Amino acid sequence: MAGLSPDWKSNPLTPVDDRRAGALWGLAIGDALGAAVEFRAPGSFEPVTGYRAGGPHGLNAGEWTDDTSLALALADSLGEAGWDLNDQVRRYVAWWRHGEYSVNGRCFDIGNTTVSSLSRFEQTGDAYHSAVRSEWACGNGSIMRLAPVPIRYVDLFPDRIEELARLAAESSLTTHANPQCLSACRYMAVVLAALMHGLARDEVLAPDWDILRRLRASEPLHPAVDEVAAGSFRERRPPEIQGVGYVVRSLEAALWAFSRAADFREAVLAAVNLGDDADTTGAVCGQFAGAFWGWSGIPQEWRDGLARSDMIETALRKLGVRSPGR
Image (tube, rainbow, N blue to C red):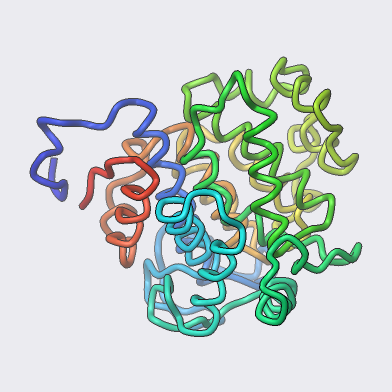
């Protein structure tokens, strides 16, 4: 197989590791595909079919944005420091202030809620209380970077999903403490872990999934998130489905694209072509699609064309996944 590391043929990924790798690669690829049409109204651009240069940040084709940078920072923290919220935020600050984890060495895209939270952390050093908690601070900045949590803690599924959900919510607490964001991360992490374990898509996304009942019993989902978990993404269509920055609509749009697709390509292209916050809708959908179809299910030209894929591979190794490489 062209483009793979020398040991790939003799030591292929296990099915679970293929799907774990797929979740992080899918995040970055969805991000890179959507970057060129970020902030564009749906229908106002030539439909995305592959990487393209341009967009509001003037990126090269295959380059990615803050979604992937923050996921890499989170992965680095989990791999090197274990579970330490202060360490997670210190690495986010290193990206913001110094361009670490960036595709081009600089921070060129950061949300207002994240800036406010990181600024407060610099003053207090307390990641547990640095995030903005107001009702308006309900963006999608914590679901866009979430994949490293279920990748690292995939073995908590299915027996300890309550712990997995708690960790996912805590990962949001550092920058997005709104209850809708915490709840979205809880639900999404459990879904991703189930897909990584190879459960069927229809089973995992069913409103009466037994694991979902357990998750709700341990702590009710926020009503707006629970509406998505109950299947709103199956009932709605664009323009009611919107790829915007609000965490609930972002999650719903990603699941709409993922649930109806025949393969990874169809899923992420449906997501990014919703426009608006296209890079993040692509990143969230890419996590679901990558966890389901795996690294091996991602088109090779997208794997080969992704900028700085060495950073993705390094992050996966730190999370305990041997990446197949390029």
